[in-house]
Structure formats: structure tokens, C-alpha cells
Image 1 (spheres, helix red, strand yellow):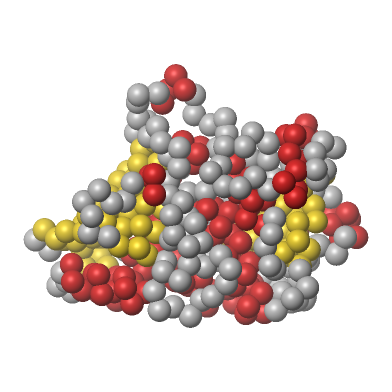
Image 2 (cartoon, one colour; image 1 turned 120 degrees about the vertical axis):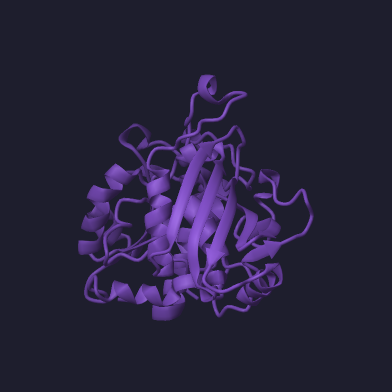
Length: 340
């Protein structure tokens, strides 16, 4: 297929770097514009990034100039898709403008996730929700599609196959890596040999976004902690259901979830990897899987009285951010052809 020209906003941050790495040789997309803050504009992308990711450095984009997110320039270059790794405050101002100007925006920012007309899309779970782009005005206008918050993404993928059992309550404790705070992120004085038991806004995001994705008012009780690991968010989860279930039924549901009808370069054939190994999963496993970092790893499955418990690991930079957004764009192309 002829590659679709796209722009990336917020290209120099940790998530922006992951976008560039994943898009540099993507079969669908051509990175035609890299945008970032004014202090970086006019300089080469490779000279302005502090590369920390355990991913190949995209040398093909190293010499590309960083530009402003100018709408006229993007239109003149034939750009139709815009990936957004912007901070939420900036995204809330710019993404609606891009939509009105006819661009197809796939955003990792949280600014518009609470907009009832904007889907929080995880194709394996709520793929039909993509149709809400039509209520935003597509194909006459553009649209915004968001991916979920990183912690929500892992939780929703683990819970979706269990929804049929009548999920009632979820208690989740997250242990979130430093990369989730961006770069430079958390001060070393605060986090070295320490843990921070509060991440502003995180608990509220998990509740709202999980309910929206699963289309359920399930009761969710989260607590979120920042820990001194680099990649991956661990989550300890306990659930109760209306039906009486056991670990065998849970394993069968997760295994069946692999037989979804979603395909694409960024979609894993096995979205949930379960292992009974008592040391599974760990943050060091964050980039495992095929494609790397796109599967959710689950272990520690147990039952106690009427509750089921397990531990999951989600790659917060790939599945929970850049990879999730790219997967959404791939799904759009498959469903709509990527055209106006």
C-alpha cells in the first residue's frame, strides 16, 4: 500500500521517542513532520532527544528537522493522520482544532478522554466504538481517537474476557515505573530507594476509563504507587463476580481472548500471556512478546473464598502509550480505508 503521510506532535519526550521508533519503518505510515516545543524547533530530531528506550534508535529520522505543528504546512504536505504525544493541557487546546481542520488525530493525551463523543479505543475490546468518529463528523470532518491511560490499558485487557461472568468489584494496586512520569520526571531525591504512594489523577483515570471502555459501572477501588523501576507497570488485582468462578474458568476466558478478529502490524496475536511461574511477571519482562511490549503479562492467579486474584504487567510506553495509539490508527485504516 502507499504509505499514509502523518505528523507526530510531542516527538522528543519519552512517549514521542517510542512513537518515532515504532513508526520509522512502519508499513502503513510515513513520518512527514516531527513537531515539538519551540525550544527544539529548527534543530534535528536526533540532536534533541535523550535516548533511554530499550528500542532501536531510529537513525532514519535522526536528521529530520523539528518543526512547529503548523496546520497549513501539514495540509500542504498531504498529511492526514496526526499522532499526539502532547501534554494534556496543550492537547486540549490543539487537538479539537486539528479535528475541525479535517485531520484524523490518534492521541495518547488524556485531554479528550472524558468527551462522550471521543472513544477510548482498545480494538480487541471495544473495536465497534470506533464508529463514534462518525458522530464527530467523519468523513466530512476529522476526528479524535484516544488510547487509554497506561495502567487502565493493562487492567481493561485483563478484565474484558471476564466481563461475561458479571464483574462486580475490582480492587487494584498499581506499582508504576519511572518512565510513566516522563523525562526528566520524578526527582532522584524523591524516588531513590523509595516509593511514592500517590500519583496525581491516576486513580480517577483508572475508574473512569475502565468503566468507559468496558461499558460497565463496575465498582473499582484503585491505589497507585510510583516505584524506582524504569519500564512497565505492575498491578495486583482482586475481582468479584456475580457468577461463581474459579481459576480454570478464568484461564479459559483469557485463552479464548487470543482468538480475536483484530489484525495489524502492531496487534499481538496473543494479547494476554499467562504463565504459572511464581516469578512472573516482572518489570524486566516489559518488552517481551511479539510485537515487543504489546502483550499484557499475567501471573499469580489465585482464588480465595469468592474472589479471584492475579498480577499483571503492562508496558506503559508501548501498549499503554505509543503502540496503543498506532494500533488504533491501523484499525481505522482496516475499517475505513484511511480516507475522507
